Length: 478
Image 1 (cartoon, one colour):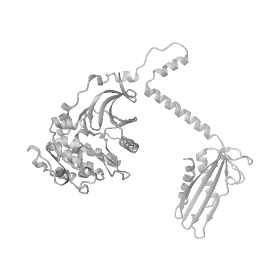
Image 2 (cartoon, rainbow, N blue to C red; image 1 turned 90 degrees about the horizontal axis):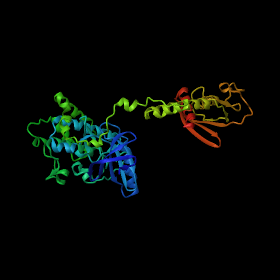
Image 3 (cartoon, rainbow, N blue to C red; image 1 turned 90 degrees about the vertical axis):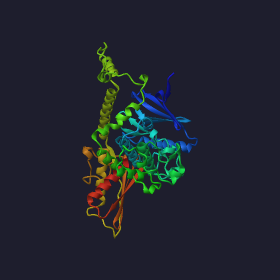
Image 4 (cartoon, rainbow, N blue to C red; image 1 turned 120 degrees about the vertical axis):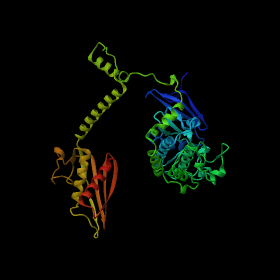
């Protein structure tokens, strides 16, 4: 029997780890494969809400350097992260079989650093940057994945951190101190070190060495790489800075780190530019025939429909034609019909006349106040009236205030009726002291009342006053 997570059908297990299992799934709505990571929900309600909030933040990062999150599905006990499926292999599997060239190390480093830069822009710390969480794609580039224990630093609440993998721990994370993006830079330095020499910088006999991590520097890379590898001094320097114990001594961001990577890459032969794909291709996971969708000619799959028309009335033929349209074409047609209907509705609604009454403006200007020339109560009414006409379309002024000419006002040719009950009532006030004025406008309609206020300065021009009055009035309808 098929297994489903929400609308996604599970095809097979991809990987199983300490933080959850990753499955290959299929989204039949969009006809694409997806990776689905399933993990247990935290026990407390606060922790569950925090996890979902962080998942939404991570899903907002859109970049080819980061594995995209398509959906988040929750149940009482489990959470499923529906992600972009990336054929290829993990950097961990790659490093088990291959000692990468310098060009491949720099390519991975540049892509991961770019992903960290995007995370930093979104105030996100990954917290578990290791080889297993870097994927090498079939195009020969690297993608960062699994923000499973990531946290946002935007609100300054990341005082404690879930323990990541030992190979990705920074000293401050090991000690349980507050973290920022520089912790990920330390993990990036550890990853570069491992790719270049095949050993983790702060491990002894396959286990993390707290003494090394917290107090002793990593053994110099030049003592660990083979003699056929030549490492530029600027690359060695930037890795040393990334591995500083004190976060204050590390680079504040990835800008200079990526610049060094690009500079060193440009100094290598052009043929080295595709070294990562060439070296990683033998490590790519094999795709099961059952997991790969059958190939259909693109024009037939997207545009093909039956050439046999049904017999019957014109309505039956039109209905048949609509049913044979492909999903995107049908959606475009529906959007067009909706747009035309909306335009017709707007045109019809703008032909509706709104009876409008202005109450007597309340103007208070202190003796020491300064206002631009030409600012009068009538000027304010005229500016508000024009904004309302732009918003509502046809209006009819009920009463003498705001009418033009003074005795009567024809709004776009509409007749005037002194005895008409207003549908909309507008109140305006202006209070000025020294160089500052407060403009307020209120509307009352169908028993509902709303008000907005704008601040005006004496040194502003009359046009700037007009713009603020207009924007404040229009804000009544936002």
